[in-house]
Image 1 (tube, rainbow, N blue to C red):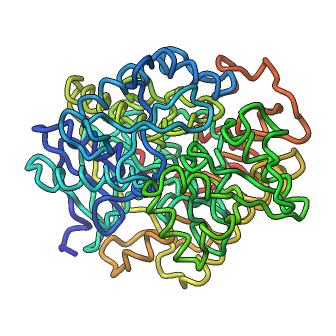
Image 2 (tube, one colour):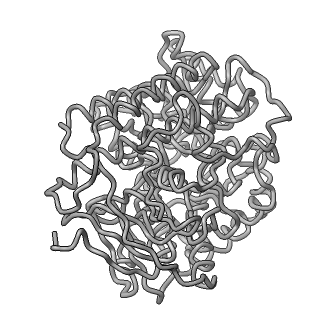
Image 3 (cartoon, rainbow, N blue to C red):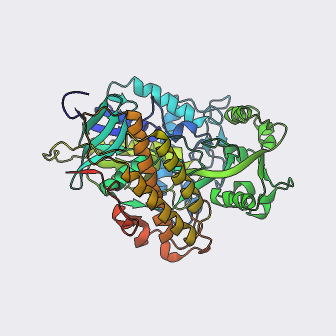
Length: 550
C-alpha cells in the first residue's frame, strides 16, 4: 500500500462485471474511457461463460419479433412489461443480424445461414447457437479478445467491489479491494453488470462468483429493487455431487431428449401439452415433486444425440467428467437455482433510481422476464441492454460530482478464519435453498427469515470496530467476507419478497397460496422494495447499511 489511506483512481465510467452484459457495455462505450472491474482472475467471468443453450432471436424464415415477444409474455405469467418485451425482441433480432454480419462465430449451415434450434415455450425454432452447446463460452471469449485489444478499456482483475460511494442519491464511485489493497474508484458513472444470485443457494448451476454482489451493492445504496422472489430453477442439472451442478442444456429437450421416471415412463406427457418443452417452472416442479417423493428422475439424451451427433460436445464432456455415458443410459437430473428474474429496477436505458448508476444483464430488473424467463432470452437481454446502457451513458449529461471527503473503508471480518466464514456461508446457502427453493410456504419462509437474520448478526459481530486502510489485509479474506455479507443480504431480500407475495405465479410457487392472485400483478404497488423494507426484528443490521454515504 501507499502512505495514503488507500489509492484513489479517477475514472470516466466504471463497469463492474465481466460477463456478456458488462463486456458488451464496455466495448460499446468506445472511445470513451472505461475501467472494467472483475473479481475473477481474468476475462471473462460470470455465468455467461457457462451458458449452453443459445440466444433467442426472431431471424428465421416466417418468424417475427412480435411472435417472439408473444412467447416471452406467455412464459412470464402476467408480469412481463409488454413494451419492454417488444423492445427486447426487436432490438435483439437486429443485433443478432449485425453480429452475424460482423463474423461472430455462430453455427451456420453450408450456405452460411444460421442454424436455428427450438427450446421450451418457443413457438418456433429461433435459438442461435455457437460452438454447438457452448454458445456463452464462444461469445464471451470472442468479446474478451476484442476487449483486451480495445485501447479505451482498462481491465482490473481480482478487484472485489465492496461498496458504492454515495453523496445523497448520487453515485460518486465505489470502494474495491485489489491485490495491492483498498482502492477508491472516483467516477460519476457506474454500470453494474455483476450477474445473478445462484451461488446464494446450496444447489445451483451458477459459478462460484454469482454471489449477488451487484444486487447487494445497489440495495445498500438505497436503490429500488423488484421481483426478487422470482428465482428460476433449471429443470435439468446433472444430479451429481458437485458445486455448481453441471447443466444439461434445454436444447437437448428441444432436439428430442425425454424425461423419464424411475420406471422409464415419459411423465411430462401427463403434466403439460408441451411435455418436455413446457415452461421451465412447470418442468422443474414436475421433476422436483418426484424427487421429493423419493424417486430419481432421468433425462434420456439418446434421441437428441442421434438427431444432432455433433451438437452437444459440452454435455458429452460433462457426462464423461462424472463417469457417465449418455449413449448407454439416461442421465440423473434435478432442479437447481439458475437465473434471477428480479433485480435492480431499471428503465429501458438501464437507468436505476440512483443518479449515476446503471445496471444491465441478470442483475437488472427490466420487466422483460416477468415471473419466468423464456429460454435463451438471458444472453439476448445482456446483448440488448448492455448496448442500450452504453448508449445512454455516453449521451446523458450529468452534473459534475459534488465536493466530498474521501470515504473510509468499511470494517471487515478479514482476519477471521476461513473455515468459520465458509461454515457460515454454507449454512446460509442451505437455509435459502430449503426455505425459498422450488416450492415455498409461509412457515418455511418465516423460519428462513429468522435463521438468515441470526446468521447476518453473527457475521456482523465478527467485524472490527473500525477499519484501518493501512493494515496488511489479505484481499482474499476481504472477498470471502464480502461475498458472505452479500449472500446473506440477498437471501434476506428474496425471503422478504417471497413472504409478501401470497400467491403462486411462474417461478414463485407457494404451497399455502397455490393460485395466482390478480392483486399481485405487474402494476401492484408491492412489487418493488428497498433495503428499508427489511426493518423489523431481523431487519437492517449495521453491516447491511455499510454503504459509504457521505
